[in-house]
Length: 460
Image (cartoon, rainbow, N blue to C red; front, side, top):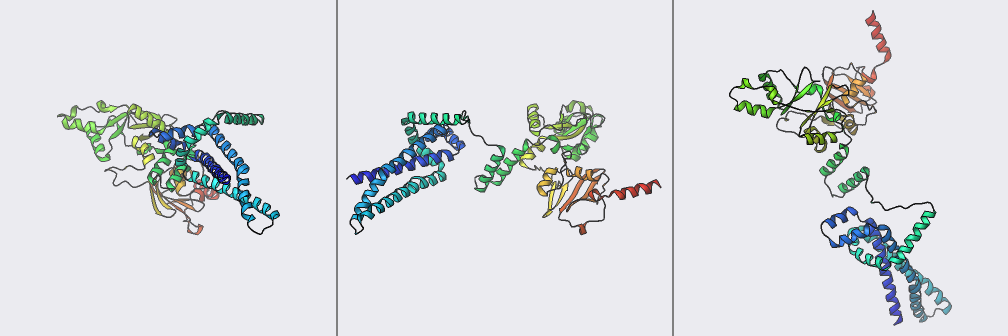
């Protein structure tokens, strides 16, 4: 009868060890954000789990106390109980009595150690890690009850540990809620994508949102030379012709030149009044000009979006540090930074700013940002003063013409289309060997002796 009781106690101690080990790993592994979600959904078990996970230091001490006590109990009761059974079993054999004691003690120690390590620790640890959420919800209640029961001991043990760490010069301080950095969140998103928790579109949106705060308005603006603006004194018929051709809804209005934007003209309102106005000549353009936002072109686009929402404006004029107009930004330009290109029925002929021809071969718009180009082909170039690939080309060769190229190591950048000094389209190709380079000596291929010879000839 005593053997059955002792073995039952051994089984209970191993089960308790498994309980405390599983609780320890589960409450550490479980995601607090998931527990918060379950609490919001009204789960009663999640409320207790939230209480446990929000005070990890104290409840982990409870787990450690439980594991220590059960381990000591196994050593105190388990080994002698198993040894006694083995001694009786071996007593029925012809093994000498002197050897039976040694063999029984060794086997008893091995059996108890195996059960303690495998059944009491490794198996529950693996289960808790794999099913952290479920295990936390199931075990938080009993663990809380044990914590209340053993609170005086846990309080003394925690206090002693804090005093010891303080003597070592370590100030534990108050517990702080752990928060994830932006890079950590990106890693979590990558893991969620890999495991199928989110789809590629959601992953791309989130990555673009992280980059959103790092963008400034100048990087996404429509450059000054591409702005379709209307002079203040333009005749109405000419204004209607421009509006019919360009298909935009809103047009900046300037006085004198584009450095003096005085407002914005809404095509829809103007056309509606023309339809219902019997005498079109009585319309005054000045009555349809509304104020427009003017901001410095280095403003973060997140701040610009907030300002446009607050002022209920769909367009903002960007100015440079000297007060001149540098470009224009619309709400569509800002939203495209998150969701990608937004095309309407009037954009059928519009070509993508990045067109892939082959591996490491692209046709790009001249105003594509250098950081976007770096994502396609790593350029051996770093200049914070230049924003676009067109700016890079002009930096290397201000006199470059259509059809000419510059070379950066094995990368050829060829100008396909220009409008004056403005580079509209380029051909970018990586892996161009020196023997394949054309004879145009531009950009990085310009040699100083060549310039000297040209100057000498011109002087003659």
